[in-house]
Image 1 (cartoon, rainbow, N blue to C red):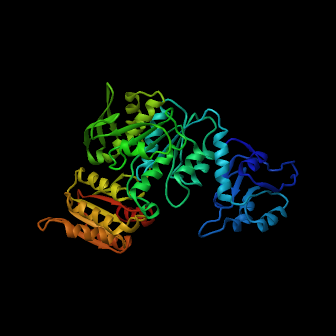
Image 2 (image 1 turned 90 degrees about the vertical axis):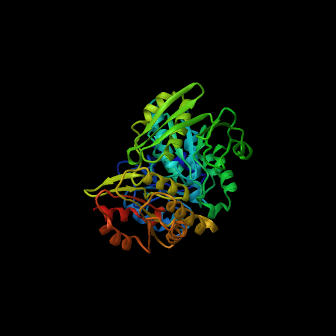
Image 3 (image 1 turned 60 degrees about the horizontal axis):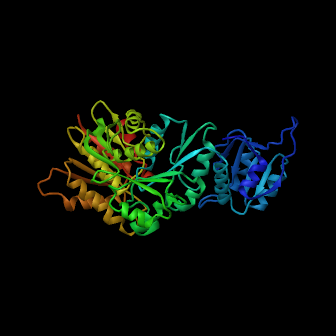
Length: 475
């Protein structure tokens, strides 16, 4: 974060300087900030701490601990706590009506005042983080580039992302997630990207938005404020994310560029080769130019996301061939289709998160990988709304239609996956379908069943913590 003055912060959060720290023995009044935190466990030097009031905790009560860790600049919304901190004498205390809105306002001002910084927004039901990594690889081949760390894609995460950027970057890749926090339009107002991508519109967060049509409208708000000078790139292999629908429902007048494999797209994907755990490749055609794209990552579904990055790369002057070259050695995050090889068997760890669409894509990865037996371990998915049971059953039915040897379903919602598979599988199928209430019971039972050459794919929603299942069968 750029060194930022106390006065700038007070203006940015639209608050009131309730108390100013008395000068220390060396004359320091602690009024320079180079980091921001909302987590009392993580207090870097020269930190500004926002007291966020969440569903489970009010961060104001952690203020004594924050001060003890060396933080002397705090943003509060509770006047009683403002008075307590002011009484310490060494605290700069800023009082605001709402610390959440104050954090968002400061993030927006900080990015608005960063002259010359070019910003790309990334959203979609699944694939946001992978696409962010692809964009980072392409853009880093030409520019000093920053990106959202981890999945800080919420109304809290986007300001924190902005503050985390190195001062010398030229381009920022900013991930934006829809859900229970602020709307995509609000996040776009903070970041104000000049270009954006939408990976797809699936079924994640239907519990919040009700229908896929409303979710489509929400995702398209990433282009809030766009004109024909701004480019929105969409993956039209997502059934509802057609060019016609995008034009009809977009909140602005963006220049829309399409990516897909069905035919007629601006960037057409063909000759797809899925080599399972050995990666994927395809041809990409844009106009008269064709390039071969090879990714060292698992899953043909990643090709579409990578081509989204190549399309944005061309907006930034990076040719199709240069983009493909930059992606040849791309790195992805832990727990996202990472491969663990034991002395006996191979485990594909894809436990970062899950939706019905990404789970089916993962089953495809498993089926395209060479192994003595193919075993899918699938856990509960959440935030799917009223149709959660039907969507889980559809995953089970999809698994039953594939060349799998065993399906292991885990959790309460996972029971519907097992039911869908049992109902759909052919009477002559070799597929064994098992269900377990929890990951510990599943690991204890499944590990002794694994034999030489087996390949095991593991996926579920983040809160299922199936990475612990992976640890239990690989340690």
